[in-house]
Amino acid sequence: MAATIPTRVLTGITTSGTPHLGNYVGAIRPAIAASRQPRAESFYFLADYHALVKVQEPARVQRSTLEIAAAWLACGLQPDTVWFYRQSDIPEIPELTWLLTCIAGKGLLNRAHAYKAAVDRNRNDGEDDDAGINAGLFLYPVLMAADILIFNANKVPVGRDQVQHIEMARDFAQRFNHLYGEHFVLPEAVIEEQVATLPGLDGRKMSKSYDNTIALFAPRAELKKQIQSIVTDSRLPGEPKAAEGSALFQIYQAFASADETADMRAAFADGIGWGDAKQRLFARIDAEVAPLREQYESLVAHPQRIEAQLRDGAQRLRERYAIPRLRALREAVGLRDLSTPPVNARGEATTGSAKSVIASVASIASFKQYREADGKFYFKLVDGERVLLQSVGFDSPKDAGARVASLKRGDFDADDATVSVGPGVALDEVTAALATMAAENEAK
Ligand code: TRP
Image 1 (cartoon, rainbow, N blue to C red):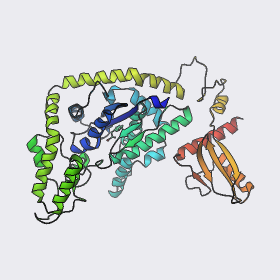
Image 2: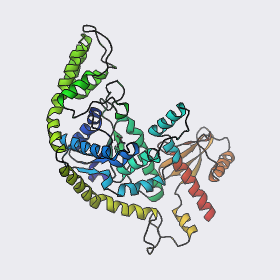
Image 3: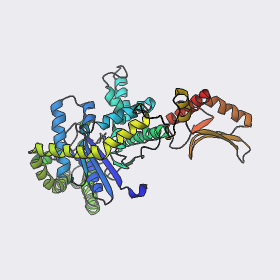
Image 4: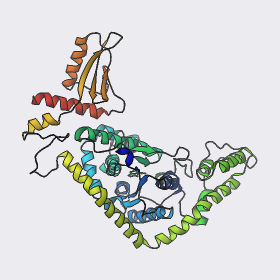
């Protein structure tokens, strides 16, 4: 059945700034290209809930939402062939966020780059770990997972810095599926290898948080000025220049064909002056952007049209997917009509008592013990085809059996030397499987 469903491509941009070349190259352009592939169903949205994590200026959130919507439309988004919407117009997204929050491992969230970086900054400054950090930053990956999972998106074009978030979305999806049945497909990150992260004016990743961006739709003269401020080394015209590691070169490459890039590389080796190189970069970018800029300006002049388009997209999307999906998910987790008979995660009827519900919902995970050719005794914890835990070899079956018994009592932690977590398995999944087994034993 899966083969008949078109690939779903989904991407969002946080509405906390003015669209810049990094957004264009890293997200908007590849996403729009993907939407033109036949057999893709594309989802584009304005991540305005995500914006609130960082921006507490209402006018800026509003302005940014307008600019980003206009940018996508100007860049060729066709709202009649793709889903185009604003996150906050779909109340089912925050609703799913809560369901995922309740299965997301806190330990996993502690390791999210953005949150960890904020904690590290606090430590460096001698502050309390969580000083000034809002819970939205901490839960950001869960909201993002809800964005993706609510529509069962298969592919998510993102910058490299977002890959960890997609991995987390996979983890939450797996965990949810494990507990409540197969509801979610596991999304994959898609990175355009060459140009996924564009350097900014100072050579670091182009990002509004570094204040090193080049606005996508700045007026022509302003674009030129910004390009002139790209940081270069002090080599003079005539001196050979290294293309590798040059922000200017990398930005050029993101806009140029392979031939143009080769020409620019040769010009660097031949000692092109930085002024000339910047002029060439400006001309190349402007050639691509000028027609889009015209569109953009006319769109921003008519915000009511964009507003209507966004509302229409969200309305249709809710009816088609979001509302029925949340209905099924609520049902799956047990937020149910009280008058219907209880069923477990595998759809089997249970009797009413709490104990028997626990017993019948219990994990299908089990321990398998076996002997290998090396003469040693092993065991693994399996859930269907998946290996959740794999043991080392024990000298006697008694030792292996004793370890299994202690695991069943909950004696397990991440640094355990006698067992390792299976490939693609989250630590929390193991803990949950063991806990459910223990609960099942108790119920018996
Ligand atoms: N976090 C993404 C960013 O900052 C934006 C985003 C929010 C997103 N939800 C998403 C991207 C879902 C892809 C899929 O760039």
